[in-house]
Length: 295
Image (cartoon, rainbow, N blue to C red; front, side, top):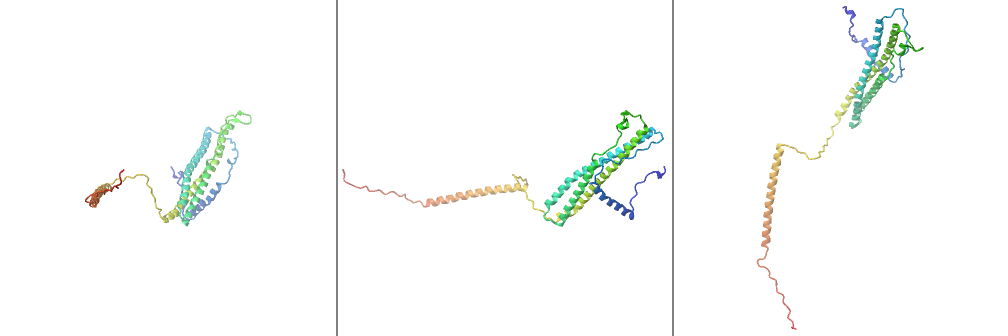
């Protein structure tokens, strides 16, 4: 097979004028992506002209090819909606992360330094970009107008009678629906692309915000940790068990020594009391009775 019929991968952008042109085109499309989030659009593409009738007889193969084009437009729409839902799930994960990071920066900051203000500003910018990407994705997965063959392809709506089957009419109807759906798919693809670019930009800004946040927290001294233990705490250690045994034996010795000292002191007090007692007991004196005349 001749290699000229085989497609080659895309060529890289050459450094120089091509690279700068590519960068200008890429950054120039970013404001358009931001603006299209707020621009209202109609519910469907503009109507196209009716396909002209040809004198060539339409075969069954023509109808199959037209049906394949219609199916490919439907497959592309489903693929775009799946990409939009995937981006939507990523955003749902990033929103609590950004909110938690913003609250953490505000609560842990001790002073309004330049690094703190820069980190908070970048986190807020990241949240705004993520919000715009969220709106773009929501607009992409919202209900859109999809063309398909319906009653008019089989019934003449003017008189309510069945149409005579015509391959040409069937093929033109499929091509019309495929063309309208392709235009709608291009519209959805713009919002999906915008949502992905805005989400990527939000992640890049969030990573940049980590630099001033790291500088700020590296200069903040660690706060003292206060721990309060409620309830008994049992610490098991061989050295602690030996220390407890030594303390118990010392307690016994001190108690025995205290008892001995108490007995000795009591004995000395008793001896001192006995020494102060008299050798002979004092006898009470007899009281003289008065003598008077007897009656």
